[in-house]
Length: 302
Ligand SMILES: C[S@@+](CC[C@H](N)C(=O)[O-])C[C@H]1O[C@@H](n2cnc3c(N)ncnc32)[C@H](O)[C@@H]1O
Image (cartoon, rainbow, N blue to C red; front, side):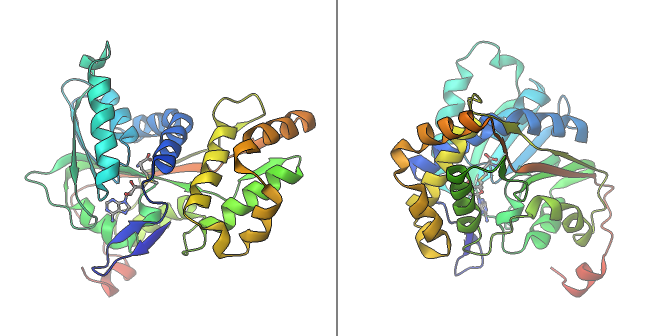
């Protein structure tokens, strides 16, 4: 879901409309527990200073702040002012909630990858759903690794969208998921970005220390999955994506987006079906301060 701008940086094709920002928050509700578990497994821990790249509305920044605790700090960076404005507002609201004093200090700033600089190295660079959006993720990863102290952590999560389906297959849900999958690829977005993270790290000269993968699933009664599917469909429709490729025909079968949630819910309840969502894949490395020059890295100096 990216386009490449004149200076070679990426722009997020879904934009930052209220619909898309609401979708990111809904998506975070489903995936945050998975992200938290993976970050802990990777070694994110108390007292760390963390950089969250492509922070969007701030959900991963918040999850990391809960892990690092009051002696740690997390800075979220994003290229989009609208996303940062929402992240700031949410952080201010959260700060007033009881118990937040046990979380790390949170800050946000505007920056466009891969051109990010810091006054001093951090203990960890993390990011969710960002590398798959970048035109040159290997260069970005290599440059980001320079922001981490030797012995520090580099951890990224991305989706492998291939599992996305309904079992048993149902006509309406099938049409919706087909539209989403096809619309997502309209600009060449890699549906298998999550599965490719492992080789991406190696190409960047960062041999992975670990990998984890989790696939959420849920039926008609799930409070988040169907609303998230419908909101994704809406955000893609607003960006005009179904009209721009083969998804147009499937979109016609989907019909009125306003009644879509209820229609899908009753179809899935009747057939006792389960929705299988994209797999969240996390890859991490504990950086030893030396970059292993892979063949690709040697061919493409930065
Ligand atoms: C799918 S959202 C993910 C947001 C957040 N990490 C999450 O998981 O909720 C991707 C975000 O990356 C940002 N982004 C895309 N390309 C970027 C770039 N080159 N530099 C900085 N941010 C970028 C977009 O503005 C968007 O907010």
